[in-house]
Image (cartoon, rainbow, N blue to C red):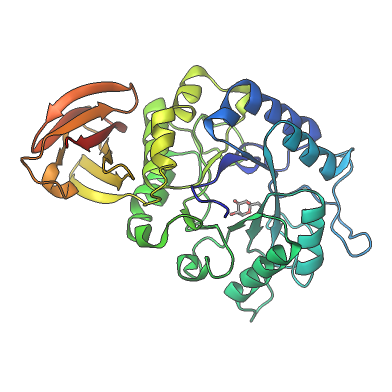
Length: 375
Ligand code: GLA
C-alpha cells in the first residue's frame, strides 16, 4: 500500500525549472542523506519538467544527454543506493507544460519505461491535452498503465483542481492530486492556496489519497523559478505548519545544498512532521476565524490517532502581536476537560489547561500546539 501517509521529498521545479542536471540531483541526494532529510522522512527525490530529449527513440521517451550524460537509470540507482526513492515527471497531453514530448497516446510504453528506470513516483501534468478529450479519463489511463507495470509507483495527479480531482483522483489510481494552480514564493500565494482554497477539501483526504496544495517554498527567499519576492521566516513557518495540518504532501522546493539554519529548523522539526505523518491520516480544518480590518486570525485543527489534537494558531493580519485562542468547544472537547498543552516548535510542555488555550502570536506567524486530553 503506497502513500499511507502523505509523501515527503523534494522536487526540482520551484527553484531550478530548466536548470537541472545530473550533478544537481546527485548533490541533492547527498544532502538528503548528510543533513538528515532522509532520516526525517523525506524520501522521494523528483525530477520535474524539462528532462527529456526532443525525439522518441524506438517509441520511447529518452533523456536530454547534455543534462544527464549517464542517463536516468544511473540516477535512480544512485537514489536507491542511498536509501531514497526516485521520481519523474510527464504530462497527459501531447507536450509537457515546458513544451517537451509527453505521454498522450503513449501511456503504456511510457509507464513501462519509467518502471524500467526504477521510478517510484510519477508527477503527471495537464498541459497540451487535445481539445474534446476527457481529462479525468486521461489520468485514469495513466493510472492503469502504471498499475499494469507491477511496480509500486506513487501517482501524483497535477491538473490544478480543474475537474475537481478530489472527486475522482483516487479511483483514477492517484495517490495525491494538486488542488490549485502553481504556488509562488510569496505570502499572498500561501494565503490564497493554503488558507483560502483547502478548507473545504478535508473530507477527500486519507491514507493513500491526499489533497496536494503544491510544493513547499520554505527556504527559497525569493530565489529561483517560482520566486516572487520571497517570504519572511515567520511566513515560512506558517506555510509549513499549515501544510502539516493539512496532511499535505511535503515536497521541498528550495535548494537544499544551501539551506540556512532557519530553513533546516522548519523542515526538520520532527514534531510538526509527526503531525503531518500521523497514521490516522485526517486532513485538518479551520475551527476559528476572526476577520475584520487588519485583524485576521485563524485556528486550524487536526485530530491525531492517539486522541490528541494538533492546533495551529495563526496571526494572518498586520497587528504586530495578537491574542489567538483555541476554545475547547471549537475542538469538540468539553470545556472542563483537562488537557496537556505542548508547544510543537520548541517541544516544551506548557502545562495543563481547561476550557481554552490562548497565545500572543506575532504578525504572519503561528503558534503550533498539541492538546492532549488527560485520561
Ligand atoms: C505545471 C505544474 C508545475 C510544474 C510545471 C512544469 O505548471 O503545475 O508544478 O510541473 O508545469 O512545466
